[in-house]
Image (cartoon, rainbow, N blue to C red; front, side, top):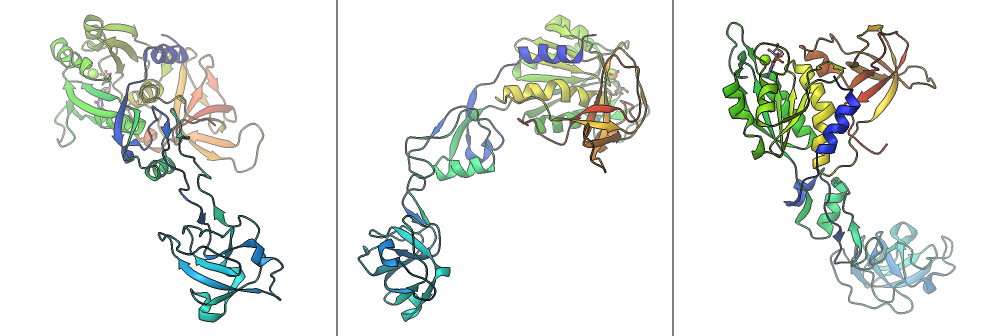
Length: 417
Ligand code: AMP
Ligand code: MG
């Protein structure tokens, strides 16, 4: 058995970022940019108004106040999308809407709230009273204020969120280069497995793992390919595991324990290389890792929660690394444990827990954590209810209620804080 961190580092040392691909802009959501995006335009593209109001010459507005407004002539009405036709001379203003180009001659905008229409309600051809002085540049968004033509607007390595999608659209990028999502082969093993649509006969159960794993792959940003069930014999398992080189990564469940029909490890040793096959952890010590041809292979244990925890610890960070992410660890918080836990002192425990903010503020831990339900690795319900994995250190044989423990948040993405 090797320690969890050692297994994680060994795996991640073998995993490499995939090559970039070009995707349509919306498909880049949540992906990592593989090149700088250089703008070929200024943003804003032209000087424009930040307010609905009047484009003015500041020199005309000096001393204006509520009590003694200056009355100026309105030359035109400039809506967003229009091009101004009139240059402002002394005593002249133009009514202007947010986003409309500032006319030549104007050097500020006075918002409509500081004005009062006189003749023609302050529309084109009328007059308007300006009730506050304008300072140079007031309410004008300058051309290139945010991004200049030739600037790097979005950087290689940055993650594209909704705002990034908006920026790419503003810059006229219907497609963009990002690091590719890995294609992940999912294999279940077991003579007992039947499909989701079947009512299991005697001795049979439904194949829950291939669905849970597909969901985990999707959440990690990979593309799941369910290859089906390998029955518990060497020929069947070899046939399906041999397909690994068609994919960027392969994950199997079951068949890695000490049972008479657990053949995954032997097949891996025959057609590939085994790096490790046991990790000092619960749930799911029989975590197997190796390669088949160029493809990393994860032989996760069959019990549904062991599968999912193994995925969380080893496969999810691998998928993220392939996708170009550098943050590979989920946020961790310290919490006060609600119950006594007994454990084996030779392995790390990852209990399925529910974190909640502590009722009273406390210096050492802002959260309380309780168990999410039965901790049997055969049961998925606690995993379903959990928002964290409570990580209990290898060397302890018991952890008392009230202890401060480390929790890995499953409800938050990997990040920088
Ligand atoms: P194994 O690791 O193959 O010995 O399987 C351990 C336990 O997990 C057994 O009770 C299996 O029936 C169960 N199991 C294995 N594969 C799956 C699966 N795909 N879906 C649900 N349960 C499974
Ligand atoms: Mg099995």
